[in-house]
Amino acid sequence: MKPAAAPVPTDPAGLAAWSAVAGRLTGSTMGDVLRWGAGDAINFAGGFPDERLFPVEAVRTATDTVLTRHGNKVLQYGSAAGEPWVREAVTEHLLRRGVTTDAGSILLTSGGQQAIDLVTRLYVDPGDTVVTTSPTYFAALELFEAAGARVSTVRLDERGIDPEELDRALRQPRAKLLYLVTDHQNPMGVNIPSGQRPLIAEMLRRHACHLIEDDVFADIRFVRPAAPIQPFAPERVSYVTSFSKALSPGMRAGVLVAPKDVLQKAASLRENVDVCPNTLTQSVVGELLGSGVFHRLLPPLCAAYLERRDAMLDALTRHLEGRAHWTEASGGFFTWVTLGTPTDPERLLQSAVREGVVFLSGSRFRRGGGAELPELRLTFARLEPREIEEGIGRLGQCVKALMEKDDGARVAEAPVRGRK
Ligand SMILES: Cc1ncc(COP(=O)(O)O)c(C=O)c1O
Image (cartoon, rainbow, N blue to C red):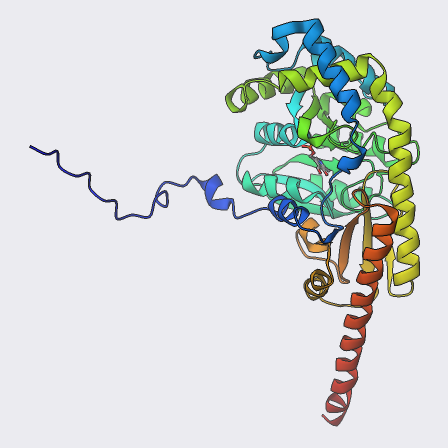
């Protein structure tokens, strides 16, 4: 006898079974950025390093060295925190930056993003509040929201934050976690001023709050930054950094420095997620740090990005002077542009896309009410100076056309209002 055919499901697959987290996942800005990065538009949108600047030969040599020196071991599973000799090399690197750490306080992660995720999951239950700046890094915002957090923001500008506003935000009953990008911030390119850092550390203690200090752009700097917040309150800070920007995001080499109890729990959590850091790429990073090659790569790399930052500032002056103002990045990859009149940034994006230019609208980086004037995050990292000049030239034309159209519409409306 033939077995009975399996019943055909009448329910659409999965719909009845989604968890609350899955229900909250509705696409991500990172997905858009990756898709746009694939086209041939002049791309001011993605915060990627330029692959033309990747140290391919140095990575090849270091890979060879670790395979020769450590043999099969670098292809095996490793410890959840990362190999001790790599953590030693990372410790030396971070001590130079002013971070308080030792190899026992470090967990190597799959990029800075995983470190942010692990710490968020250790502190945040649905309904808890995460305090951050407005604007801030979109993928952190989306991660907090996916965890069910309420996001509460304090203003950030070239002068940093308003300490009193932050104090009020941290006083909220379920404000457990603060998230800050201290240096060369994504998206504004600005820093939390050195004078505000000890004040923030003191507030963490007073409000029993934990800080995720995101410092993934630390190595790409045009001026010497102040010491991080972490040394002012190491017991209350999870310091996150990464080799994505100065070495390679494809290697997924991130670092979490945290108090011992946080680190132990983060290691247990990561064992359930991806078991251990990538043994091969963390060894390559360890070798590049230990041999001094990594630090020798930094000055020419920073000089290349500085040239692009300057090309961006010059192009903005040439094509948008009088119509917008912008930040001057102290490091990292971004310039934040605020237009002078209330034009719809989505309309601007549509006309820019028609001209072969993409950028990210500032609203992606804000929560709890947007800005009054339209804002754009422009990345200068992945473009040569002549591409930046060409792209900003086209963008400038789009802004001009849109503003003239809006002005025209306002003039046309004026007599109607006058007759009322
Ligand atoms: C502020 C900030 N934090 C974290 C990350 C994540 O970087 P990683 O590639 O190390 O995961 C990024 C990436 O763009 C970022 O801009």
